[in-house]
Amino acid sequence: MSNGRYDNNFYRSLNRRQHTLRSRKKRRLAIILTLVIILCAIWAVAIFWLSFLWKDGKTTIPSDTTDPVSTDPIEEETSGIVTDPVTTDPAGINYITLELAKTKLHEGDLILVNSDFPFVFPTNHEATLKPIYGNKNQNYQVSRSDHKIRADLIEILNTMFTEFADLSGKKDVHIYSAYRSLDQQKDIYDYNVEKYGVEEASLYVALPGNSEHHIGTAIDVNIYSSVDKKMYNLPDLPGYDWVTENFHRYGFILRYPEDKIGHTGIGYEPWHFRYVGVPHATIMKEKNYCLEEYTAFLRNYPFSGEHFTYEVDGTRYEIYYVPLAEDENAKTEVPIPADLEYTLSGNNIDGYIVTMTLK
Ligand SMILES: [Zn+2]
Image 1 (tube, rainbow, N blue to C red):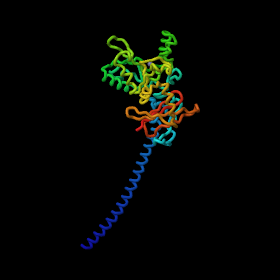
Image 2: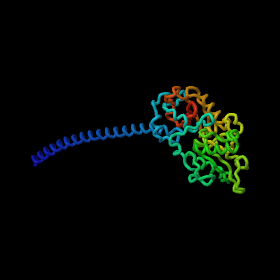
Image 3: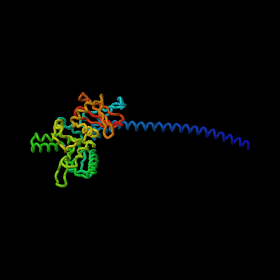
């Protein structure tokens, strides 16, 4: 028994040793396998992250600009990030640099289009537009089913006219002109010249190519009275001042005010509103600047100098100007914030405007 027990013990001991050896081997194998899995995981994460960064540089950053056509392949080729975070200003804001092709000068919410600076039609411009009719709500009207504006603005109009309808019960504000192609502007111009003569027509109708209606962010608004089936300008009927007074909160400016004819070269148009975005519409209204004046004003705040700061509805914005590269064929290096929300716009003349939302 004792031998047997000894033998048994011997075999048990041998088994244990073999078992220990096997489990050591197993453990070693498990460690190697775990290492391989971890390496694979690190590799996969790195690939995913790199591809994300690549995508980020190629599409996400340009789409942060105010330009809605960021998917245009030409733009992707001509713009991109060239440096990692490099500069930090005294306020602790980090900047990276965006390299912009000259075509970008003519895009964005703040482009100045007037008789001196024509609109430069981007490729596939009409693809960025959407008919108002069919996408609007019931709180305002549109004179034709084919009036189009930049797609993202319809929701803004829906929200604003809902606020107005809730406050006033009025739903008869009426958009009677929106985007115009070159041909459409030519027809309107020719018709008015024939009817009123060049001088009078030029005061209210821009030359084809020089109309804000080409941008897709300008609308003409009046009231179509269901009482007498006539059209009225907003100031002509009581209760509609709210629209003119509050449009800025939604990013729209009254583009041709009565006291700015000397700057705009266009007669008073109580019907013509243009989207420039938030906070610019509010700044312009509060400082009483038309777009010609505001464009000049912003040049006083270059990136390298003091930036312009302004608070709207409890949010603080910081704005700066970056002049176009002196070499006509060179791309312009535009510093943009690395960690803050921002919008970017060309001014259609000589530089870019960056608007940061401070946290
Ligand atoms: Zn107009």
